[in-house]
Length: 115
Length: 114
Image (cartoon, rainbow over all chains, first blue to last red; front, side):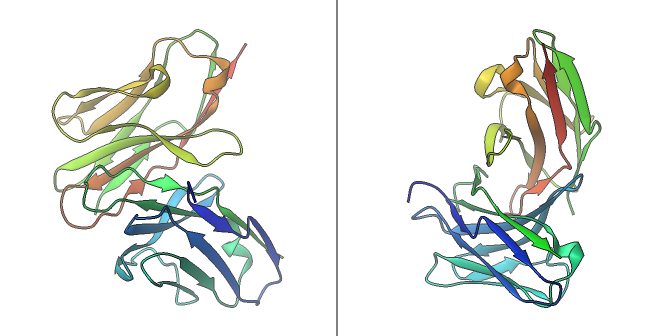
């Protein structure tokens, strides 16, 4: 596709359930990023992938959060045993790694609401 | 580790007035600097970036920013704003070399009133 695609766009779940959020990056982009956007908190870095490996996952808030990327393309962010404080918009971005331009192309996000 | 401080969470201005959105960063190494914009109900997009060279960089929609190494600042300016500039603006920093992680500030909500 032309841009970064994220699904679902909206997810409402009950506390304690697991959720999976999917990101399909721009074709040919080797770097992929996950951020969390909460009201008043800006963009919080979660993890980034270079190909299928994650050189920096320092932003994952707890061991309930995990992410994987397969085939150097699609990535899935999984949140286990969701809590109300996990409610946020989860943004995915991709970039052409190695260019050092730093331009990230963002998807429109997955809005997660934990009841 | 690098960090970004956006000093104003909200900036209201009148149409055709000038505006400056402030950004300060902290890093132990040389950095690249960026401003991203998020229009209502849209994804983030790059407004402008500083990689090297001239410290005054121009971006889309008439915005510009100046890199000041001694003050560790990268303030965004526009001489005359339009209603359509109403959006949230995010400053971001990335260390040169090492991790490709881009660290964002908490954002400044610019509201342009008629």
